[in-house]
Image 1 (tube, rainbow, N blue to C red):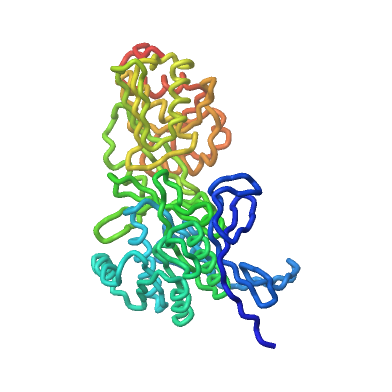
Image 2 (image 1 turned 180 degrees about the horizontal axis):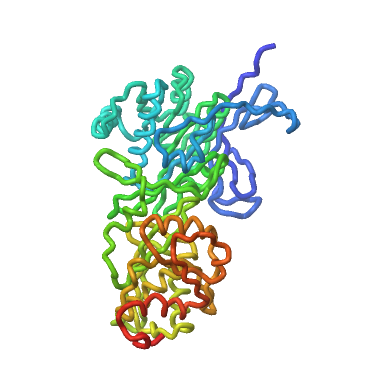
Length: 466
C-alpha cells in the first residue's frame, strides 16, 4: 500500500479557545477575545484527517521499555550541575538571556568541548556568518575540529543537514531567526517560533539527538515568543548578569530531568566563560574588616551554599517621601524589613532614604536574607560596624520574631569554610544543628539580634538606643 502523502497548509488558530479559521481574524467570534489568532501549519492526508503530529501506538505504562542511554556529560561542571548531570539524549534545551549576556559564547564553548571527544557537533547560526563565528572561536582558543558551522535559517534545510551528519549535539542560535516556508509570517513571529520548535522537538525525540536552542528575551525580561517555547521544550535555562558585572548566573527555570533549583556561576573574561570554583571567596574578596553597613549572609542557590555581602546606605531624605532602592533583592522584602525595623525595633526610618545592594551583581530572593538586610540598614543608620567574623541568617516575621531557615547545616559549613567564627541564627534552629565548628548565637527577635551584632563595637551598651 502506498504511503499517504502529507500536504502542508496553513490555518489560523485562536490561542484562547482553539477555534480555527482559514484567514486571520482580529476578533474571535467564539471567546470574544482580540488578537488571539496565530498562523499554524497543519498537514492534511489523502484520507482528509488533519494532524500536527503523526499518531503513534498507544501503550500501557507497564509495557513501556526505558532505553538506557547515558547522558552527554559536558566538560563544564557548572553546566552539568544546572542540567542535573549532563544533557539527556533526545532532549530540547532552551537557553535564554539578554542580548550580549554570553549565550552564544557559552554554547560555542560547550560545542567545542563535545567535539574534542571525537563527536560531531552541528552549530546552526541564523544571526552570524561562518567567518564571524570563526573570529570568536579564534579569540576563545577553539580549533573547531569536529565542529560543523551551518549559517542557515530554513528549518527544512537544518533538519536535512542533521539527517546527513548525525551529530552528537545540535545548537540552534537563535530560534527567532529560523523560519518555515509554509508560513507567510516573518521569522520570530509566534507562529514561526512554535512551528520551528515543534519540528526540532519531533526530530530530537525520534533521532535521540539533543538540541540546544537560544531564545531572546523582551524588555521586561521574559522569553520572546514566549510561554509557547517554555511549554514545548524539556529544559529552560536562563543566563543572568548585570551589564556592569563580569559574573554570570545560569539558572534552571524548567527541567524535566532534574532539579529546577540549581545555579551555575561563571565569569566572563577575554577567553570566554570561566567557571568559578569558589564563588563565595570571589564575592567576599573585597570586603574590608569591621566595615559599616555591611552584613554577610549564607544563602542557598539550589543545593549550593553561597556567602553574599549585603550593603546598605541610609541618609536623611531631601524630598517629602523617602526613597527605597534595591539592587539584588526583592523590593517587597526591603519594605517588609524596613517596616519591622521601624515598628518593632524602634529605629526611626520614616525620613530616611534607604539603598540596598548585593555585591557582585547577585540576586538574593530567599527570606533567609532578611536578618542580613536588617543588620546592614541598622549598621548604616547608627554608623556602627558589624564584627567581620560574624555572619547572620534568619527570616523576619511581622512581629519582629526570627523564624526557622532550611538546610542550616549546609549554610554553616560554608560559613565556617570561609573563615567566619560566629553566626546569628534563629533560636529554633539550634536544636536541629549538630555543627560545632562555629559559635552559634541563638536569637528570638530582631531587637535582640541588633543588640548582639551592633553592640560588639566599642560603643557603650546603650548608645545605640536599641
